[in-house]
Length: 401
Image 1: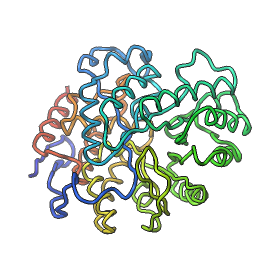
Image 2: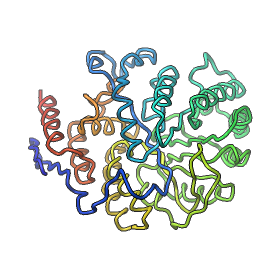
Image 3: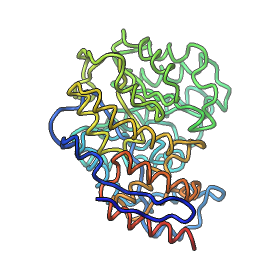
């Protein structure tokens, strides 16, 4: 089924929901995922938020956002991702954690825990509940408190990067102390997150010197691995190789190069100690914790199962266009990638609008969204061509007012 949508000043977009038909594989059945894959899910907002005069220039406060979260659609979206084989990474940047704060993050994780998802969830631990942080010791205690909460609701904690460290000009020793003290105060498993300054300007110079190696080597039985969001394939592959002897793994957060990183250099795998009660294979490949998985869940589920069958050609055939879509959604300024993720969730009918906290959706242009729709069609990420075409017409009509 194809639907053409005329766009003034450009060629028609063809939305086609049949591009995966020749592969004849139900993404909800068959071969298990050969990688642990977590979708860093976003939040949907209630329609009434359209009338709230927040913007990137006039930002709201964290406590102003919680009442506008559309809990029903957040839950249904997470259950859908779970049904396709993905775990959930909750309350991370994709869910606008830096804007939402701890109260909203805590409620999200509590709500996700109650869903009892088959593939589990990872929860983001930070220090944003603390009234003030004046020392590395304060920061460690605050992180440990959030780790313990996440574990209490059956999540696997991942320690978010801490802008306090860069703002304070922390030394290599300070970094090691903050992380190692928090790790020592908690049970495992625990994951780390390394975030590029492309996502957050406060990340310049993060993990100075040998601090990351020190932290990873401190207690490998607790620190099972890390999400790497550095948009640097070579760096990730080097780090992946260097921690393999500790039975630690990388969960790629590279939205530009995830296709070869997930595939890896070899399909040989060895069993590592389980993570969150589920098998964890190790090898010359990355697992995944990606915001883009929200937008490409159906084709990605299909592709990853092909990878499990050893059909690398089919994996690359499906995932290549997904990576092209991801590069568009995550183009500079990278931090606005959530606009494309929410837009496609709306275009596919999974939520009633494409709004973001502080109306960040206005940060991308109409042309950007048109291009995203076009590439989503090519990637097989449009689930109902007719309905999506109608929504796109609606969007273009509103944009022309």
